[in-house]
Length: 147
Image (cartoon, rainbow, N blue to C red):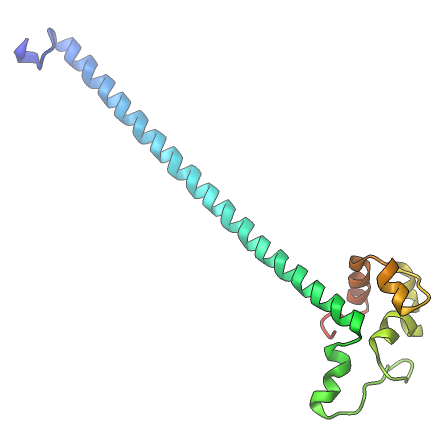
């Protein structure tokens, strides 16, 4: 028995060696699978985190824009204060350019405005119209990045 490492026959030694190798190989395959799965999960997690950061940034920008619109303040309209230029006027109407004018009064934007909302006053706009609708209107008027 000592000749074959505690096994009575050489075939048992071979069988034991194969079983150990199979067990060792299955462990290796399992850990390779775990590593591949973890890499895939971490990659997906990174993509989700990147998209979440972009989404949070967009939501923050929308929030700031809506608040600026509610108080009537925007870069487009109030930039004259910093630059020392004259008060901006609407190119189509010739009257002073205000947030209220863009959102409610400008006759040139009437067709676009009608697609999104119909309100009688500036106060009604933020009380009755969904925020996303206001943002979509601003985007279509090409004022989004200027406000």
